[in-house]
Image (spheres, rainbow, N blue to C red):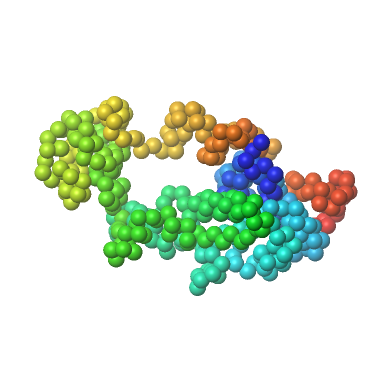
Length: 395
């Protein structure tokens, strides 16, 4: 039995933050039912690249889910939807604040019908505060929270993180919030509203950068691949490119110097302590690069592994996915999609010893489960449900 088996989730979310949350829950066994616009569905169904006209973007964050096509402004569809939500444990939505209220699907309305309901809202700035009604995208949130100011080669060239970190981490925290609320419901018998903001999430994961600024008044700036307080903790250049080293204390620095065949480096007064190494980084970087230039990345990584100094290559995605750890940990799984065919995707990183998922279902074709749920909720036969759907009763 999967950990969240028996939990029904009604998923109004689209694109990334909300769907990532509900995918995590579906991976762990929840029954996730996507409510999609007739004929179009989730916006991300239109995002490339495509395989047999199916979006890989959509496929990547919607596995193990069901799909119903409903026009939320259609009275019959709305009535059916309320009855469906009456059977649910969780609702997830990521509209701008007020949209669900306008549709008659607010937390207050739904919780009055179903007091045990957990209602999770993912939005850019949350459901309170002066920015609540402002539109937000991952790039905008990375900028406004200060993340881009500490990412990049220097303070004059702010960079975004190379993936949609605000969206994805919002999905992770939303899933955590929902599961926490489900746990509390076991004790109280009541659901609650989980309000997750991309803005709040990025501020939280900025951890010591935010704490340092709050308590010293000095905001950090981008310093490339270096660590702001540990040295050397950076990328250095071998004969065939850059690789990472992480000598996090004085003892590891001595081992690093010896392994790089420059033991005098560890005896240089400028490099004796972590603080002195930070203050003399330019000189230390030149010394490290000079030593590292004598061998290849693979040679240095093997040598440093042997002596216990953390080091590793800087892979592209194809190289990363060829790592033997991928096979050993079953990081990649193959899902058979009825239209796109066999799709390789990254499995959930949550590994539970007693309730592990053995197989993954594909992302749903738009509306493929509408008939099934109409029959279940309205208590009619599948033939009758099929007739209603074909006649356009819910679109």
